[in-house]
Amino acid sequence: MIRFLPILLTFLTLSCGLDDVPLIHPIPQSHIRQDMNNRSVVSIPTDNADTTFSHFVIYYKIFVSNTDQPSTASSAAYSAINPILASDHNAVSPHIDSTTSVNVNMESFFSGRDYHQLHVQGPDMQAINISTILSSSVLGSTIEFDFPSRTIPNVTIDSTVYTLWRSNGNGQFDPRPNRLFINSDDLWTPGNINAEINRDVVNLQGIGANDRRYVYVAMYIVGAGINVATYSFIYSTPSLIHVFQLPDRW
Image 1 (cartoon, helix red, strand yellow):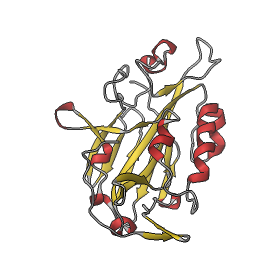
Image 2 (spheres, rainbow, N blue to C red):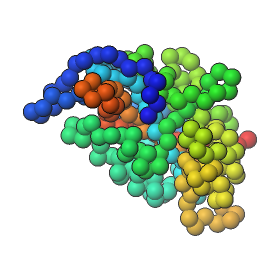
Image 3 (cartoon, rainbow, N blue to C red):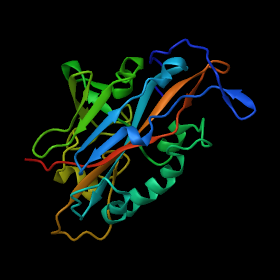
């Protein structure tokens, strides 16, 4: 986790059962509207204003498929897209909107399933972890993700549009053909799907050499804050932003 992120020095703790433990509120899944396979609108509540909330983290993972799903607003499509996508969601879904699955280390949970933290394009073409933007200033606001055809995928935060970028694991791997969320040969070529190049991509076995490839990305959002007793990060339960279909390279 990035250690230089701003931390709100609030000391409220909320009751959970018999013990008082710090709590970061999740974004309720009902606050996220998923449209078809290319757009999602996230309405962020203000309830974390009185917690030790610091920022939101977005985890993503890319999946190669041979199936064109016009709508991914239902989990029924996930198995058809890629079995690993369905397996991942089956592991995450018990935590979504859960009142008992609290203070699970979501960083370890998602990184353990090979998810990576979402970035955006900053000034001078520098990558910025989106967590640095999704701080307390976005509480009570709406963020919009857009994966339109023939357009570079983007997110709108506080009326500012940012180009979405893939992670490079802080230099641990080198995404090809670049860090954009665009479907291209270099993205899904099996020889590029490894720990050194496209570590954030999962292939699909059995696709014919001449079959068309479709590519999707699953994104989950988690709130993070500080346990002031231990000065360690604590997390909310996750919410599914959407499973987006990447636009084809044009």
